[in-house]
Length: 468
Image (tube, rainbow, N blue to C red; front, side, top):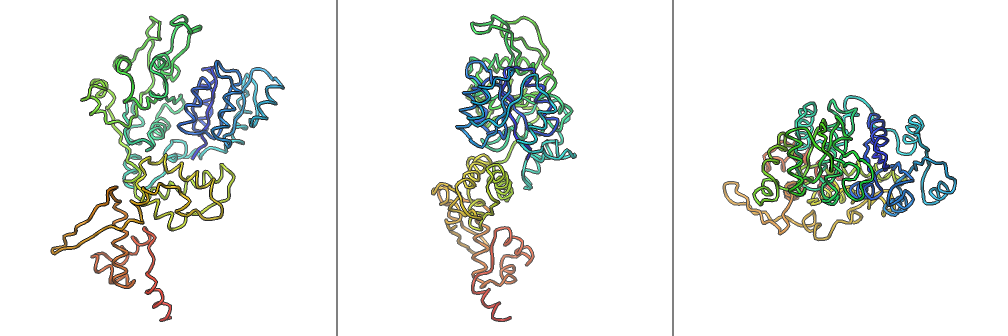
């Protein structure tokens, strides 16, 4: 996965130039125009590297640096300053900054510095830069998402991405942008919840000088800064109703005005919206405009929850294990069999984001070469739904099966695993007899045994050893 780089600078033109430079080299890049906005984005996803302007309005760069390091000591920070002030640089280094660059930014030098601190980006083959390699998974559910991304990327239609929190909506929206013909233009994201409603309109559309008390100079909004690129309206389901009407107007007319302005400005960017809400229910409840819903829902993309992605959870766990071991300079680890079983059986209500945090915590807090189930810090009640909870199965005539469901539900993979274990126990480890009883081929059963990490029962292994 490419390094996640953030630039925090109130110079919008500089942010656009750096974003374009780094995204064209395969890095994931996000921009913020104030310390507060940058810290809010870091709460959603901590970057590998932050390019931080020392002279920011309100919260200055030094205070922003302190808070960044308090959030994650491993996050690397490079200061951007218009003045080579020795005292400021020394203080910043003491607080944990890695290096600094002076304006005007030497772009080639910046590329070398980013490569050194954040690592080289992913390869630039047909799947390297387009963002699909950012999405880890091989299950049929995620394969459908891959296919949809490829189909819609080269269109200009509005996309509505839905799915539970933590399923990767921003990652998919970025992949759509990187595959599209707009890849050399900015990709910008705004969270409709993290910014106060009173400021959201000016962030999107900008404002004219004197539009309100603190508007001391004209500011371009994200829709204008995006140019011909893409803009993600994240958590649009919680956008205030009055602003929903203005977004609808922009989608219909492709025109907008800055706050306090009279000039009509063209909106040339592609709009991608994302939400974890059921917008149809929100429309019926009067909390979301029906006309905006239909305007957004031109191309719907639904992301499956992690619990429906089968063994993708193990691929993702391995990916995060490697990523955080490198990032925190920890030795390479392996997942024990009981950890793998628990990862498969757990329902993951927080989806990929929860898995990511779980693996990072295990990397930081576990000693030794193996991460076990007890190291994963999964809630005990959640474990009760997992491998420690036996499934109650009763069979009746005509192959009817009755299953007693625990209060928290159960995973289909867990049912299959326990059925196979019971049959193998019944046949004393004889795979051929077990396959006959399950009406599948021996090879199919062996494949499913490997999938679930099931070995021969002890008695069968002893019999095999004694016959040699």
